[in-house]
Length: 119
Length: 160
Image (tube, rainbow over all chains, first blue to last red; front, side, top):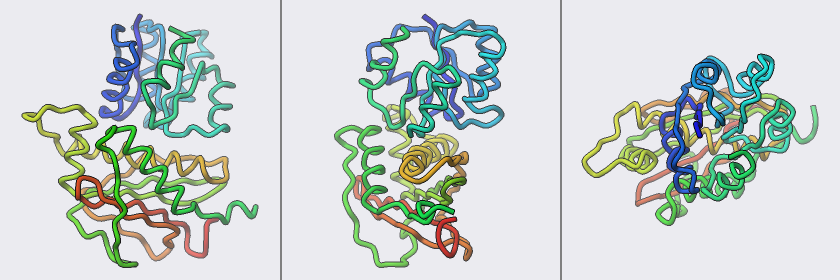
């Protein structure tokens, strides 16, 4: 399985990769993007099975990236990993077609719970 | 303007959010201790600081300041660096920015919305606040004997 991780923070991308491993999902191929625009391009060229995306990013944010993907016909599984875990943000994410939203700070258990439905 | 828009976050909520971030990032070593600092005292350490702005249903600025050595230690832990690897300034800026993003995002969730959270602004140095902002809440903590401060400022005259 190929997972695309989109976050403008290299530190956070490292933490997400480490947490995936701790959650028992360490054997997957990882592709990294620094913003939503790069993620959009990499979905086209790399065909990941899952996108794990931050919400707030420069160039293009996560929700605009998801909307652009769905508008282009992509059905790639998409989950947010964001510091904004309010009900309002969860509803916006779900309405746009996200499978889940993991709120930062997160635990390996939160990753496992979220990924079990899509992996 | 709703009455809720005039609220400020409770200090105990900001403290709980900050402690949660530290514990999740650092595990058992992430315990923060309270630190007594005189009111209005500037942050008393060579510091890194990062701020994020919440705007919309509630307006405020969340700032994290932490000791230079602490910032580098925390960055190393976040990146899982080995003893012979050193965090660069760019790594520290990234890590401190993520800290304020996590604390700020959680503060945003406590306050009336809908609001947006800005990308973090990070600086090597103490944070400075203009006369158009007023301190709504400040918590001083210590991790590994180094100082950490989280502040929430609102527009002068109260949150808009």
